[in-house]
Length: 515
Image 1 (cartoon, rainbow, N blue to C red):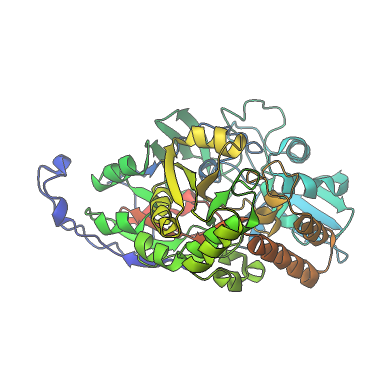
Image 2: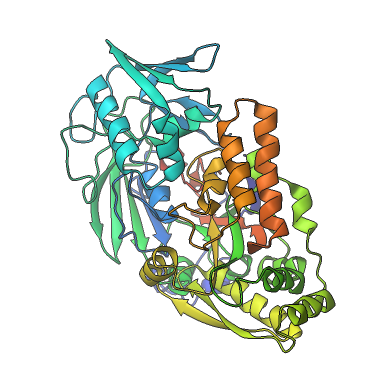
């Protein structure tokens, strides 16, 4: 995905009085060099400090990670036989080569020579088998478990691993990429993870930081940076304050408002977050168990105005549970399924038994400022049709436990991404009996269409069925779909190599400080 430079520099002079570490004065930072050779890192000691507003205190086990923020960091620690690149292709990683039979049933992977785990052990075919078996038995990603259950036979012949499927699956390679290869004789993945990636895990201090260091025995092109420290902040406000003080080298997922108010001399890039932001509605509780109420909210919300107010128009309307990076699966027409129509919203509310509106709560994680900002705008818009939205800001752990895990909520504003580059990664969670179906969506037509998409071997038919799933979600207003959010990344002007991926990750191995 191409990156756009939004602003090479944001005025440094305005921060002259607040940068106490600079002796009360600042100077304009020179423009980044066009030189592509990494510098010696003399100024930055080849160490990068990244600011994040999410405490990474869930499991670090590669098959148990739930938070997108955790996966974003651990992308640099773990690798599968193949892995995604920034263009959305799957490239060889722990495997040096792979072949797929003409009938699509057999996948043969050649294990790369010289792959060394972070604990110094050499990766063997037994480790690969262990990883696949463990992932199939313990993964929290149901779509991956389902895909692996279709493997009917696995044969090891020297450094080759051959897997046979019960039926062709055009998405199988994407699931293979989700099976991170780990050592079979290591049991502390949840707290001290060991993988094969370009960075190795060093430590984690809850609510403080997580530290990675360069993997000196990495088989591929080594990381340019020696150390990456992720500093954890309580919320977006605290993170922005630290960024604006000049104490951080890189912060991603900024809002347009934060970018406009950033006064230090950072370089800012713009991409997309590759997620679906929505008002996610608990379909099992009143009043959102009534489809007319959900549809009313869709008509009451003015997504274009919301984008203008929260991000100066940046961001892409979606209309259902898919974002544009999915290409052929994305249906842009659904973004206009519910044009802004307050009178239609009032009419539907009256039909649903709420002629005077109602009051409900939007529970939003306080550490994600873009979602908080969106909730504030939405509350203002809904008031125009007599609906009062009370905003309840909670910390991330409370949101994960109560909202995501316990399903104890009425609505929430967040963004959902996919851990795999296939449509089922976005759509499986809305199947009625899926354990990740936090909104309690229950629709037999949706379940049938999704099951049919999973079972067909015809790519055109599968694509049509996935789009049918998207339309069902839209027609029934499962949620109030908003946007794939713009992603603004502020970084030290000397930092180079940043690439936007079609997944919610940051590839630290490609970053370097230019001379």
